[in-house]
Length: 289
Image (cartoon, rainbow, N blue to C red; front, side, top):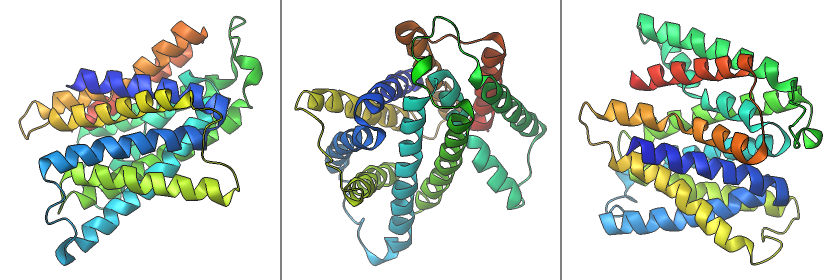
């Protein structure tokens, strides 16, 4: 289940990078969120997950779930945009470091960090620094390089996405104290769709793609996004194996970077590969705890 989740999310992120390059990050995200909202609605309906959801005692959790959707929408918007103007091999590892935000928040609340967690935090920070610093280096064979923005801008947008992404996960964890994870995820996608729709309309832009040919790709993208969430959800049942599932699922940036290398000829230099390895190893350790 962890592997299927990583594969689904990794391919979905690669599709997001290409869609965003062609029609803009906002419209690409809107199409994905629409399909994902429908899929999660059907899943929740089949589970009977709407019963006893909208009741007074759940107001706080519903509000937190809505905040999760709002913040996640902007985290993904920045993520999609960063991939459309920069190297995927730089953006993906930096955004994937978002569990660091959760650990730092917990530590600020007084939670004790184990030695392995402290080492993981240092590893992630070092990895992000190496990946970010290598962002300006392009292979002569990288045909996408001429379309990229300055690497400093790409790194800053990626860091902002990672920060907001981690904040969104904190809202998710808080909301899940009183409602189920599947309910929170449903709120996340529905509120996220509404947020991005309002954002696009406020810019006086059309939310529709240039042609109907985009809808099948939106459907595929949304199904992969939903699948990534549901595989992880269905693969965790409160057993000790949940940790393994979560750790394997957290390796999805490897899939995205592999597709960029294979299909876009995007090369990864040794120092960048080292940084990515440190980020993924550190994140896996954090997720494991």
